Length: 66
Image (tube, rainbow, N blue to C red):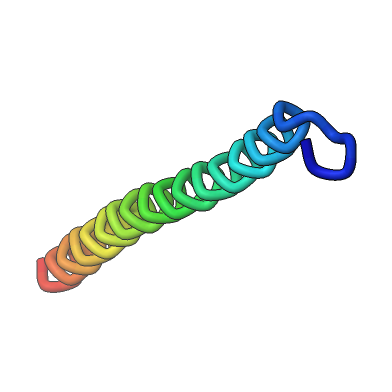
């Protein structure tokens, strides 16, 4: 005992602190994963938009030449 405080109190405080640190790390990792997923999906969407724009552009030019 340190100053009349049982050791299990210090252990409990340490475990609470450790739990908070691990929760913060998990939250940060999840946010990073989510941002990567959003970026990937955004790139796929942009590629589809560009392909559709190119297809419309080709289709529009083909109609003008006829």
